[in-house]
Image 1 (spheres, rainbow over the protein chains, first blue to last red):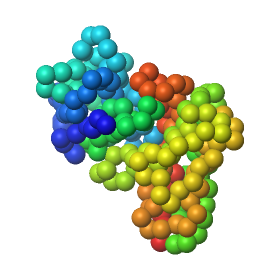
Image 2 (cartoon, one colour):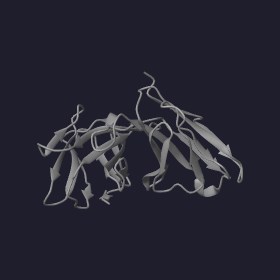
Image 3 (cartoon, helix red, strand yellow):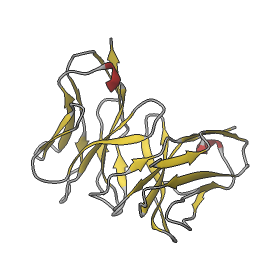
Image 4 (cartoon, one colour):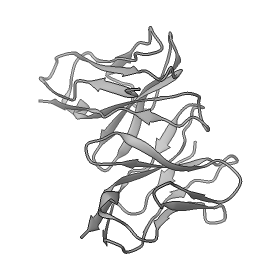
Length: 113
Length: 114
């Protein structure tokens, strides 16, 4: 079964500064990767996903993530963060069953005004 | 569409009590899931269902039961509540299985067992 590691539990960053949230996965034959976001007191929402094709995937709100096979990473980046980006971000991979997701422990992004 | 709805939002249980967490989706999704979220631990899958009448265990099923009599509803039952079951519980659904099926999450139920 695949596993995923999020290296930072908390990331504080000033508004309009760039941010990178790190995610590494255990290698596997088939690689599908997801980033979910959880805003305060809400459920998770899909932010972006990599299934195949271009290694750079983008979300509608300015985040992007790059699939790097050699480094087994799928880091999430944004060039300029806003207060509204304050949330917890989860990296996920398919779990041991065909229908399961295995989530990382999450990274709390705090944007400081 | 309301999406995935969960009731109640909050609940406090005494040790040994039972309760059912309700989950309903109106997107006609075949797949439904129950997760628990503990601080700093991410989400753990409790049970999932690939259609009405079909359920299976996830990573942490002990102490829980589920049923799926309709496409829309996927209740989670706690029979004998224990402090270790203090957590936030999320229900989710998806149209298809992985890897294509995006999972849609409800707002969660915050459960405290004392």
